[in-house]
Amino acid sequence: MRARACIKCREYVLIRPDDPGNMTLISKFEKNHRGHTLITLNFEEIKGTYKKYQTEEEKKASEEEGEKEES
Image: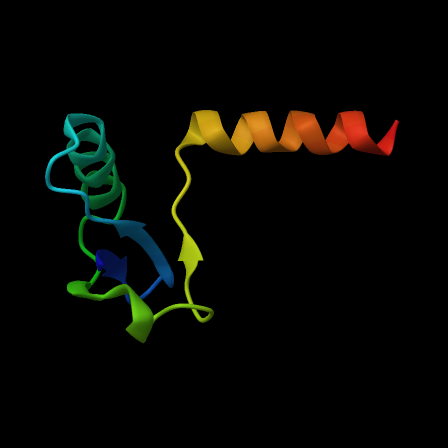
């Protein structure tokens, strides 16, 4: 599987060419990391060293879920 990765932020997004929703996510990723060095590579090359990119909505949802678990 291929991934698009930001070297500066050490974040990645998986590439799924047949998924239109994934194409939107990749566009958001590239917009968010504009001006950074982006590379396309095999996911195995960064597995365990880079973290998965999350949109602002996903970050908020995971933070809220974490707060619920602490209660």
